[in-house]
Length: 122
Length: 107
Image 1 (cartoon, each protein chain N blue to C red):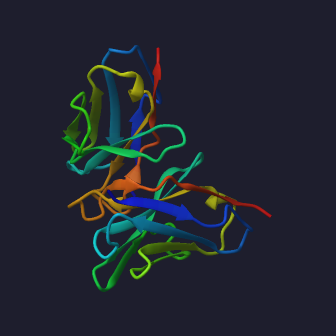
Image 2 (cartoon, each protein chain N blue to C red):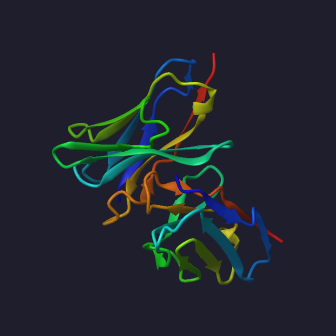
């Protein structure tokens, strides 16, 4: 059974870069679609983007965040990553990493990490 | 982007009763709709995809219906573990978008 776990700083200062890691166990990261989704009281659930690693990294980002977001993967470590640049208080949220449900091609998430709260504050 | 609107915001139901949750899309999403359940402190759990297909391990008391812009999640006989928040999510257009959720509480 695939398991995911988010890690990273719980507090980021405004205008800095938010960096999170998702560690995957119980399965290879070299297939499937790997997503980042966040949840805040104000905006609810928001899909940040995903990466699909089939030997060549393919990414897709929410247009509302695309200019500030990068998702990458390190298959040798079975990890994928999220970077959000120039953060503000609006980026305060619980951040989830996830893997798509089998044969869903990234459309919906079948496996989720427990989530990690990231607060943006000085 | 497509806006998903769920109703009601809160549904009060007695255990053993039927619960009916609605989700409306701002434009047609065909049958490209999923439902999730979320309990406090936990991530969402996929219940339904393709508007009406139960995900692996989901009890038969959960059923989904609808297409186009109007969708329904029905819980035929609410169990204690079903009291939670439910979200719909469309995946017809990028970015995938979620509804704001319906809280199902004990009456």
